[in-house]
Length: 63
Image (cartoon, rainbow, N blue to C red):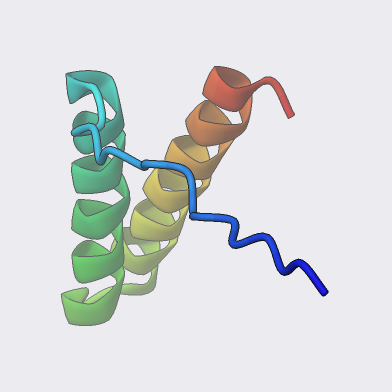
């Protein structure tokens, strides 16, 4: 009986482009703003920033 051994394909990690880092920073800053907001309007603004960041991710990846 012959058993063939398959190896995993080589995978190289590539750093994400700068625009993805900027969108991630936008989403994180909106999250922090929502968490530390003293007023409701500031919290709503922070959630809006997070929503814009998520929309940009969808636009970038063509979803």
